[in-house]
Structure formats: structure tokens, C-alpha cells
Image 1 (spheres, helix red, strand yellow):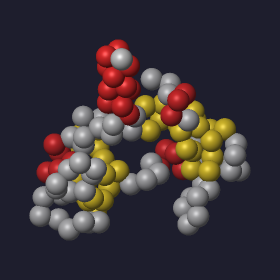
Image 2 (cartoon, one colour; image 1 turned 135 degrees about the vertical axis):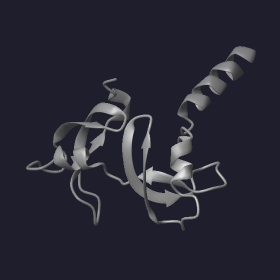
Image 3 (tube, rainbow, N blue to C red; image 1 turned 180 degrees about the horizontal axis):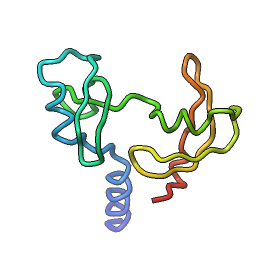
Length: 115
């Protein structure tokens, strides 16, 4: 029973969303929710909007979704076709999707990360 609890804790902890970097919070100091923002983080420049991330008390700058590389990966492709792009988290295989009121973009297959 103790082993099961340890494994569940490890699995659930691995699925928890990562806390944004300090620069993301600094970019939204004294800015209203939804305001455009930007900062240079550990993975390079980020453009986005201020929002309150899960488990946080203050707003942080979150990237605009989808990233431009995901849109570029589906230029000339139809929804449902395979695609590949390099986004903020590195290279990813995915499928082109066309959500309502959004451009066709490559949605990564998270189980198939190419890290």
C-alpha cells in the first residue's frame, strides 16, 4: 500500500503544471489581467498576456497560444494531417487542428515528445 501511494504521488507530481519563472510574474507587476506582456525567460523571449496561473496569487505573463511555429507547421495542410514544429518546449510531432475562431495549427502529441 505504501508503494502505491509513493507511485501515485510521483505520477501526480509529474503531471502538475510547472510554475512560471520569476520573470513572468515581474512582467505583469502593476498590469491588469489580459494586458499584453513580454519577458526574456530561461528558454528565450516570450510574448503573451497577463493571467493568474493555477495555484498562484498574482498574475504572470503567459505565451500567446498557439505559438507562431505551430501555425507555420500547418500552412498548406488540412486539419487532421500530421505536422512537426519546434515550440517553447522543444521539437514536437503533432496533428493540424482548426479550433473554432482560431488558425489551423499543429497540436503536439504530448506523449510523443521528441526531447
